[in-house]
Image (cartoon, rainbow, N blue to C red; front, side, top):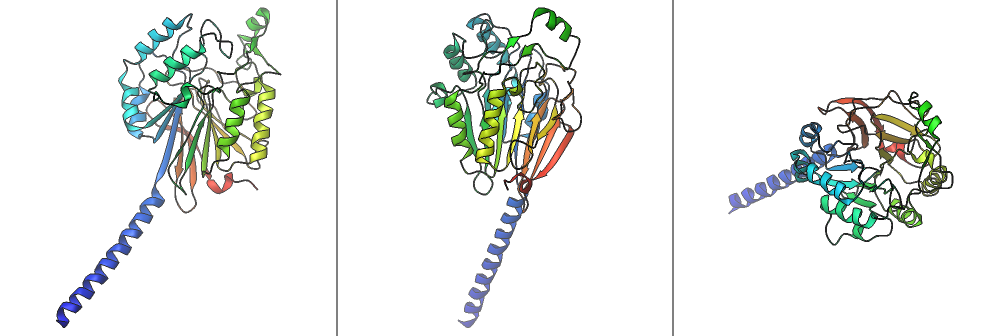
Length: 357
């Protein structure tokens, strides 16, 4: 009887030791986990899309399409629908949907009809329906009905490993950008530092409803926030489409961020045929970093000069990635990657650096 009692006691001790070891292994594994958010833009929907092999191999938790996924100047809805049909023949994006959560927003080429690239688009409701249907948005999704377009926010993970992904819609309520005169455009064609537009100083990109929505999203609890915009936020007012060409909207974004001081915020943007890192000190009490993805398969442009750029620009950049490494002192690794998924350049930040004072 005593022998059995000793055996039972030993069994209890062994079980306790195994339980403690399991908890230790779980904690160690959890500390080594990471969350990867990748994003890209600017595609020729009818040409080879070699980058998907690398993206699908990396299996990011989230991939965000930042617009211009159709290389078409649509005169009517039929042009857009034809382009979607061609795009759907490629296997890579279909495989991506099976391994990663996919989010999407439009930009000029996958939103515009007959040159209407903002809130004046007379067919924007039809464009929204077909866009969200193609990207398999559930029929009950509020994005089909909300007044601020197709902006979306999702929090991935649980406390203390929450990553909030916020995708802005810069088209639905957007005011127009006017081009400079014909003679000036011809001159600027030979200067990579100057684009064809002139600033719209009173114009807006989001509309009041989306501004209210954004403020609400930025106040939700999350350790890391990735704010994604189809057009760059940190860019010179040089005639290329960006938030700087809408100075009133850019100032409003700056005011919102300065008021709320959201922690752990990083920008991810598209609409450029090169990749780069940028940062600015006047949006938050800590430096605001921006990752510009580059082009998925549209080739490259000669990079313009920018006071915001950190390091060099990469014409061969095909997508951007923000990886959060969850350890005792969490880190964020910002990466620009080429068509084979190889890192071209990276920045490593500690999460403690991205906290308001």
